[in-house]
Image 1: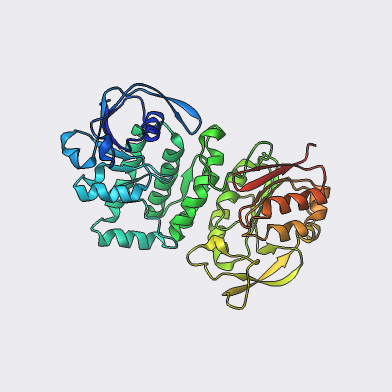
Image 2: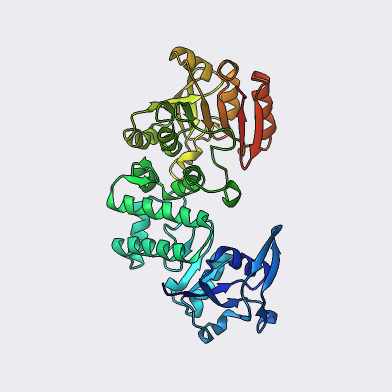
Length: 415
């Protein structure tokens, strides 16, 4: 296979070492661009560099550092933007006349100079994104082709599979949405509507949650909020799982695939969200949808849906006030739900309910004592959450071992 010549934007020692760590060995670096004119004419030499506490071997020798205005002096197939202010740099390169299809922005979600697939516009549906692309002269088929081409390029360029995997998830979902067919990825099946309804929410969630199904060492994965499977807190084949705050059902689908001989109870109180959740639940025979908010009391309640259209994951029973747009829902305690439904086994609880995790735990004391399920609970909504939620779990069952990582706590009892 023909080797690829690439320019790298970023002439600092950190960016040079980053390029050495991230680019595949058969990719030829022809130049490092930098806006600092004092670096122009410098040469990159082989040797070790320390980056973020790691010792990285730089294999490049006599590779020039130059300012981007001189790009015509160099032959390169692509320019990888590895420096900070990536999207400002992308626009700078476009303004210099570098062809957009040559620009690869290496960010949490890799994008190209033509399209960021999709543009991360909060709340826009896929149809709206495609309409925006059409206004730019990009047809639906071209949009899809560009996405697939970018994936192929990045699979060829980069070692680190985390970002490439996120791009692979995104491209698979995009094509599924455009073609209106079931999304399938590494054994997980989802209805394409999950992506079409709100691509930005899907990408944000899937880039963390889908890492649970990718076989990759934890230290090489750049989670933001973190996975739900961590250490001893994992979904097993016979587990009964409660997905509390199921939203569109991404974690429910992954859990259902893992708990093949178990069952997943997907709790989602918002009516519009449940319509999408139901489409994915229909693809599995072990997902049960429950229309409740889990709280510290039972009865009618209200949930804040003020920002629902832009972010369906932001609905919360915690921040309802006089200016909120609300929806009436049914609340129940976890203890009461388990008793009413004669649940005799509960192995795993995932909870992401926009700050109401404390209410969930207040109504789950008997469950935590009797079943001691594994817990994966979000702790990033309020600053006191890590300490408060840990205290509440220990108060209910002192045998819990609690580990904190990313934006979650993971708790389990040795049985």
